[in-house]
Image (cartoon, rainbow, N blue to C red; front, top):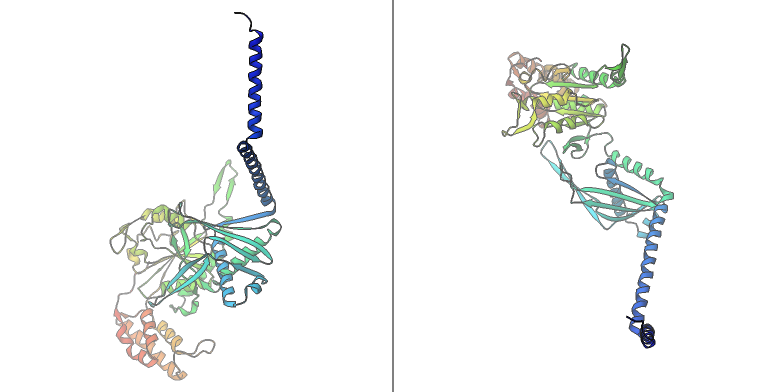
Length: 490
């Protein structure tokens, strides 16, 4: 083929010029195209500006703010909630104006509240229910020592605790980076406030899932002298427990790994575990549990009550609980004879627990058992206990807490109706010589009935003294004696 002629070249140039003119006219003369292009450019510009502001704010936040997070697995979480509830209650009780409250050292305002119901069941059958308002999930603002903070409580309901069913919760406190030192002061004040209600009181803990949780309100400590036992019994147990607690360093020194000189590559474990077990046995109502409670209060210890018949309790959970008991706490296992029947645990309704006898023994002193632990066990029938349970190392001291002796009955009678050690009046006003005569008569009656094989528990005597006058108590006490053989020795 030949080359295009001059006419074809001219037509192509004319077509290109027409296309350029069309695009130029479209961009310059079409208002719709100009508006769309302007809006697009403005959107792109605003998007870049927004991202710049977001990144700048994030960087500024990281540089200027600091956050502290607590979850509901940490004790500080409950301490802080208690502290916030106290601040809200104090603000409402004060009745001060909003502006005056803002100028106070601590000020908090919250519109999201939660409630905690506290139920306390007493031994005499009465109960009380109290409500405590706490900060609910949401955002709250706090002014503490002239420092403003944002408090955010979040609750995750999609991933609850598989053992307890409780939702996962967190509290995040945010303030300026320069004021971060106030966190330590705030947490210390919350801790002191939470523990202040437990000063001079006894805390009872029970298993909650795989953790120990306080049960009810802290109880008033019972004086050790208020539990009247046979002469020398209380002193024997108290001295043994004190001696064990004072030998912490001795056990630590003899529980260390020492290199054996003959075998440089081997280690010799002295293996003296720092734990002790006690068995208090005797008839019902003799004061076994009451004495343990009074002893814990006298030594400033708490009590962890363990029920081996609890549904859902298995060997692994039992080992975990005994290996992670709270500091300064006695473990109390009551009626241990009823827990295992021929090495198989069963409850009163026939329910067979997952805790095996071998698992319980391993939890007491096995390889995985915990250290720094004091275990008290009680039983009304020591003859039913398996010898493997009460051997030394698991039960280091077994003590009989028997029915009322003549001397015990006299001491309890004088405590109820006589003056106290500090001169307080007794249950009723009785002349000293008359009180002594009635105490002698009470002691004589108990001795005479004991010679006939008839016994009376301290609980029965206490119930009689509570509802009767001194003269009526002496007259009616004979009706409370029962035929009972002497308890077996362990």
